[in-house]
Length: 203
Image: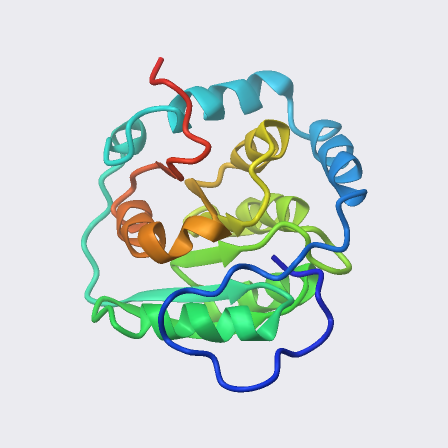
């Protein structure tokens, strides 16, 4: 997640995926949750959690999009070395292309309007506008865009609020090395994906 302003020195080794940078804004979690739950009905959040609790790989609500040759991806995170690492991981996939990056919520909204991505990899603790509220705004004017949260947070309330926006998945950054590519593929197929670390029992 974002929250670290210093740029990491030296080159990033391709393997293993580095541990996400330390968070300097833990006190903002409760504010993020209050902000989101004041605008997302609790019943909607609950519905999303029930859906997300299903085994990864199940088709979300029967949605089966037409296959596309290359899916356009926007990466939103305020930590540039992390964005670069995700770009490197996705570059190994022939069916996805990173078309842009954004370092804060307002920039992300602008990039979505300009680039019309198929998928957004969205951090939560973004400057200016947090990732949950950014996703809510984006999905109002671009409902066809899929959102996959990629965050170091695994708090149940934050995960529930994130999925309550209409996002299709949530990957914990510490598990991204093992799960991100599968999550991207699944979400682009219309499935819901949750990290094993936060997935509850299937309803």
